[in-house]
Length: 599
Ligand code: GLY
Image (cartoon, rainbow, N blue to C red; front, side):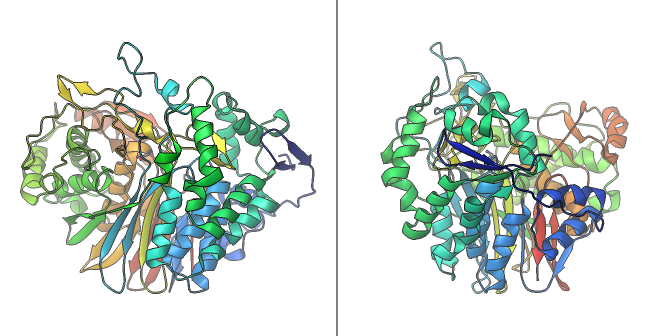
């Protein structure tokens, strides 16, 4: 393990120093937690205890407030805000600011996010759309070659073409303006200190830098930051990011306008348009006109709970809601988590939901999405009745939900890879926040400016414009937001939250979130157990079975039911908080580095 201090003072100028960093003792912790504690030197005893709890498979307990996210340093920033009486919206700003530094591959100021808010005073659920947006100069053929054929995925991702107008800074500000109580500028204190003084590179970041080397080296600013002195960042390195600190100081002083106008906006545009080999079309006007959009939440009833989440342009709440709605008539509790029959029902409900998703779901500001029809109880009962056989459905097609437009769309084939991050928070007043935040692919477009990476969110659009002669709902259009799978969710019972949950993972997010809700509500699992339970995800027919888990034991039975199976790593990043009569219970995904922390 290297122990260097790395300081990117400018794109090409780096200072390398070697401090004697004391190695954290791992005597008191389990082997798994020990590896992580090493990477998070300086975290509080409470955060270390939370890592231990996660490693032991038990939820974190708290009485008043809680925050769960993908990195202990980010969680501690949020915890400080909540401890001082800030709201969940305040804490989110602090968490996101630190995540953009310590987990730059997943989310940040150059990306977008969706937020679901439960307001304790009014009892209302609100959703905010901070999704990246296609530039006004983008055309439906953005991801096609001169012959009209789709580009290769990586040819589209890496460079300026895939970059949409970021939404995360505006969403942070919008949430704070609506629901915050702490002073805005104070919410960046931890992130600025960590960027100035350095943070310890975690195992996960180091691994991803090493495995993503070729693409990360394509652009000088990105190469300089992740390969200081020519060598990839290593676990345990101390990394400073003074450019990010300077950006945060401006964001703290000027608000989100600091990103959307002026020099930083100009730098974003110059970086996108100047990307060698693959320039994009983003302009300063796109940034100047960016707006967060409040959308109606999508809620579906399941086992006497309301499952509420983000509607279009996310497919998350509709698809999770469809899966659960179709399963409402089947007794999953009696079948149990180890039953192939339970997974047949879940898997085929998911396939049916993904068929509707591929045809109907897109940005509803541009195409008429039959939101109500897709989650109407009659429609879900009809679709759910297709599950009443004994074997895997031989074929699955989109259904015909009720709507007042002709619904003639082609089925899309958007390519979606896992990345992203999720934040769950409950504050002392009882407000709950569920936010999934992304720059899309790991390290996004690989373009970096002012200390943060720019997204490649536009590759969440369909590269093709038509299928079978019909237009594809999720095709690129100027000013449109690409369809997402992000599923920030708040589960309510009698109008009060009982579970705040979400995950990264591309379109597998939908399966991860549905499984966690089923684990908690049907199988009586505590929140940590529900998160850690093995994943089985079926989107398009083949059953993904989580490698190295007891789910592998279900393979033969699933094959006998007619499924192809594919054993693979399924790296969710679920972060959830259960609100129970005995207090708050938090869970963090053992597949990643995060924790749940509360008091
Ligand atoms: N880019 C991940 C998602 O929006 O689903």
